[in-house]
Image (cartoon, rainbow, N blue to C red):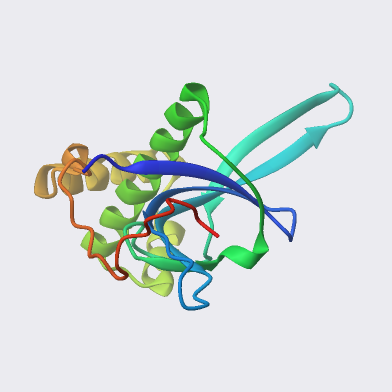
Amino acid sequence: MKAQYKQFKLTSGEEVICELVETNDEDGITDIIIRRAMKIVTSDDLEENTRYYTFKPFVTFQEDTTDLLALNSVHIVSESTPSEVVMSHYASALADADKFNKIRKATNLSLNEVQEKLKELSEDEMDDFLSQTLAEVELEFDVESLDSNESNVIELFPSNPRGTIH
């Protein structure tokens, strides 16, 4: 089953790109199940008259981007299929988030331990330390093989014959 990605504009004004896992509008259920949700954050540079976009995790402190989320469809103002350009940046942001989370889990250092280590090292030593740590983690965990080709979707609701979200 090929993953389906959607871009939602929410009543809060936020825009979210996510993998659509399950939809259902029967029996008054208004939640849709999503994962790998990233919100689009805009930043304006008024001096340069330029707008910048970036992706941030939709749910703060969500450690695993593959965790399932329930999104109440009542709060969806509009829905679209993201463009190829947006999907390219989205995939890159997800890969970065997944890589960071794997590194953080592998090193398992507390914030205090990191702060103590930072105090002991010069800037060059810190660069070397971070490069070495990253290389060790990448060897231990094949972070490039983040595989979303295999389906691990659990069908939570029966099929929706109308094919609509809400």
